[in-house]
Length: 117
Length: 414
Image (tube, rainbow over all chains, first blue to last red; front, side, top):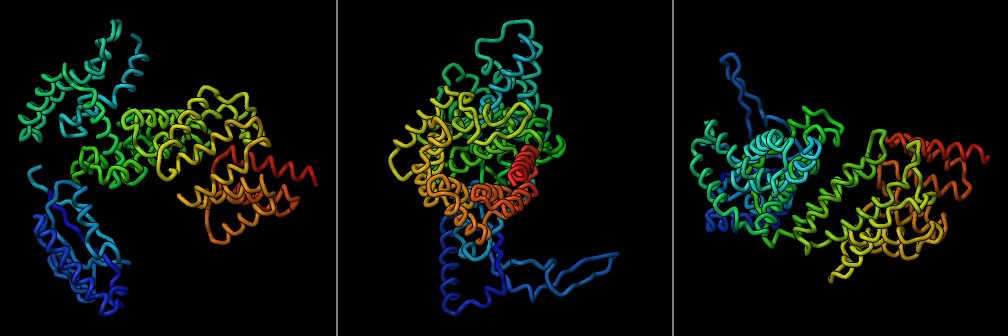
């Protein structure tokens, strides 16, 4: 099964992180990504720019409406994601728990819609 | 056979029959529907005649054929039809040789799936009551004080999640087993505590839930006797439940432990609980929380009266609990036990310190314990205020009546 692991964190808190701690975190992310590539679980993944760069788009009556900022203001923001292949939710949870960001924020594990159902 | 007897048999057998069917079919809903079909068939066939020697095997056999009927009718299963039919027929062929170990594994798979941590605790409880215990949706709804429709919805969503989120139908591996077993014990304990002291409503004790919890406890202990703390949990439930008859008077009012007629306690159940505590305490390694709580319950069960209870040892056991499983409720119980050894003044200091740290907010037990200590210290005005606070904080009618009684006693004394 495929799962999207969404990494949520508090951007404001994250931005306050010391340079040294951030460097360590990035190294951990690299090691983690490498490990799930080697294990064959990795399907994709990216870090996202902060929500201050985001734009929300709606189409109403054929007109494009854009809003500055994310769809909803929340305490934690989507900061990145991994798309993984896993045997079942237990394996997916195990992988999510190893994402370095899980110790700061939270990871939402969502199964990807399968059309052959 | 009477319809009532058939109902009872269904309830006893449905968990195990369902567990085997789900493994064969790989789909909760399909297995449940087929088992319902088999029950309907049994109601017709068994009435007025002898039941088969092995009713569960009969039910599984009939349900298996119903599954095949159903998947032939349902388009969504067409792709997997041959695979499922093959699995079912393979199993039918091996029917005579099915080892008891397979039945044990099927039941454990079902329990671990229902108690999966990807579900909210109340969903775990609802799924377990519905599928493992074989309660009807209406009965589960009553346990949650919600409508049958709302409960049916919740169960449908949970079963969808099993399928769509890939919750595995398996016994966890060795590395995860202890943690997952703790989750299972929590579910059993939640069923029991809701049955033992319902959080709302007028009935103080919902016997059926307590009974289901004990049945679940026995089942898990039979399936996995080596699981840490299962003996302790079963002992704890048996010992608490053994006092049931003494906990309520004829008018449905609460009788506190200190006033209970100990001759009403169920001695056979106490003996069974005591033997289990011994067995749980004999396990090597650090003491487990349910076992320590069971040891406390055992001391109460063995005492000839409230005064002649080994309070010193109970305080010691609460101190063990505070180290291994600290919680505000344990702190409060510890304070209550301390009052019996060192007097109410020292206990009040402990309770006030707990309150100052903000533990147990919106909970009636803290003001209730405080009120009792203040009453014993002769501080009647403060005791009155605390009883009012306790009464406002509970939704349980018998508890409100208990606090009202205490208030009336205080008024009579002054």
